[in-house]
Length: 106
Image (cartoon, rainbow, N blue to C red; front, side, top):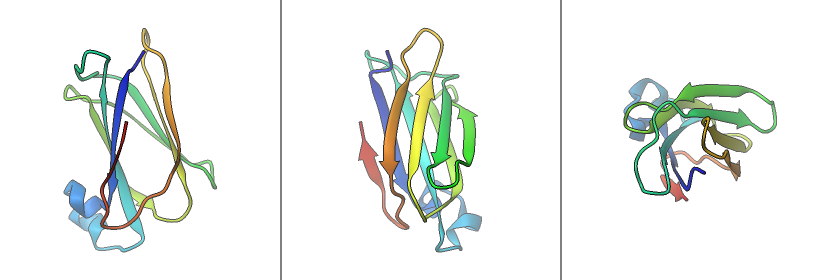
């Protein structure tokens, strides 16, 4: 089971994406995935779904256990799901993005 799934949510400008930071209507999701021992999990599938439109963006975590999704709309809510063979799936619902704000959820 993926014990820890750390979400850092906020404006893409804080994630080093200045092109997106110029638009006040965009934000981003940065996810770090670790297992129950605290070791990062690479090659985990991360899906970010915009709840109102059903639009899905997917990525695999890198060797540092992270995946980022810049350029997301600030309107509506998101669901983030992480999965990897041999581990249980983890899902976080009703994530609201706010420009200029970083949030943490475990």
